[in-house]
Image (cartoon, rainbow, N blue to C red; front, side, top):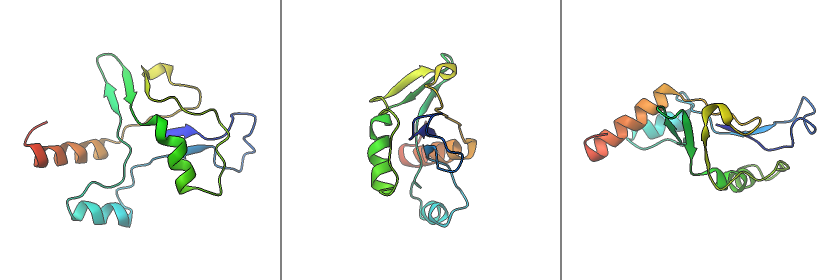
Length: 119
């Protein structure tokens, strides 16, 4: 998931980071450590409703706060994200990107099965 953190396209100078992004990185040392200890790695979880072709993300309210906490030297100048996102996949807000990572989905399903016995 990538959400614009600057006003696009007017503040894009071709050099700065334009988005605040959560990216599934299965090869990172932190992710590998957490997986090897049966823990959830850091990831952004959202829902696709395939029959309706909709995306549901209940955490967009926290994006700016998470950005400011993890990147204090970077300013968020884009409009604040909504409290939550629920829209058709082809009607995402401008410059917002959601890409599913099948390996991340598989890992979450595996962890849910271990914890609750079913999905």
